[in-house]
Image (tube, rainbow, N blue to C red; front, side, top):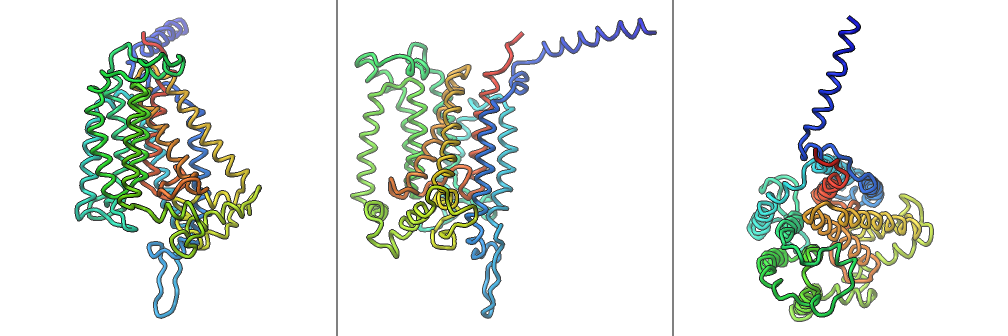
Amino acid sequence: MATQANSVRPRQSRTKRKRGRDLTQAEKLRRGPIDLPFLMLTMLLLVIGLIMLLSASSYAALYDSAAGYKVVDGVITYGDAMYYFKRQAIYAVIGVVAMLALSRMDYQYWRILSVPVLVVSIFLLVLVKTPLGVTSNNAKRWLHLFLVAGPTFQPSEIAKLGVILFFSAGLSKRRPGVPTFQKRLRQPLEGLRWFFYWSDLKELIPYMAVLVVVLLLIGLQPHLSCMILVAAAAAAVLFAAGIRIGWFIAGAGGLTVVVYYVLVVVGYNGTRIKSWLDPWWDPSDKSYQVLQSIYAVASGGLTGLGFGQSRQKYLYLPEEQNDYIFAIICEELGLIGAVMIILLFALLIIRGYYLALHAKDKFGTLLIVGIITLLATQVFLNIAVVLNVIPSTGISLPFFSYGGTALAIQLAEMGIVLSVSRQIAAPPQG
């Protein structure tokens, strides 16, 4: 009996080894290890963001009618101080589940899904301009999740990802011999042939047509800051794909003309320009938000007032739980805390570009470059606005600002990056 049992065990182990060798490449990718540093940085920023949102939004939630605030016969019923935090936490859980699920998905499927995602996002952007669109603060940027009811979301968030997927899928098929992202970083400029490459023009036409359509639809909302983010992500993918530098200079010149026309000729957000140049020109109205942000940052000092001790969150600083949450961070955690958070974002961005450089194919490289550039641009612009380095743009801070659908989509994008990282560490075939 013992001899018979011993003769079965090697056979079973050989069967297990054979099953391991028979795994398909897609199965190996799903089972491969994800990049733990990138995952840990993402989760750390998410947790810190939720904690800071709890502090920044606690007082504003008391006066939100959606959270239960009402006045009946002179009797005030205050809302739930944790209202924003609870809703954000639910979307955070949904986003983490989506991130982990997408990290186990072979990212090559996004080649097939790139066009459908782009088409759906354009369709939703068109719906925003119909009676189904939701207006808030003189801007029509939202749709109900179920079109006529449910929580609202911004279709522009989907459009950002749609543009990145479409550009990455198409440009990854470029013929060999055109400088890649890796070669561009490792080789010096080689004269004028790096500047213009006229055959690029034929390739650029369909991508520029798609980009113009998306930017036009976003501009009609209007949402200038989102236009900047989409353009930055698209430009990053084009650069990583090997499009010559001259086209970017030409595009930057054209964009400068458009921005000048919108800001100066049309006069869009002219008061924001004035508030940026002189925060004290109208301290009780037009430049009130900028001024209160400066007060919050300045009062934090080196070490801050302490967690939960912000003064500006007591309805002095508008949008303290959203676009200006970094001002509350500076006030409560001080310069040291703010620098630490910036450092975490910097490490996440650097790690993302590291994964892009080591991706096994061009599609993976372009995907990560687009997603990480989108994140980096959003972080830079939000912090720059809070510090009054640039005019107010209405850009939220990733992982920190209140906005459930935006947070879930951001985490899903991190999941796509993690799915590429699985291929980097995946075992070889055979």
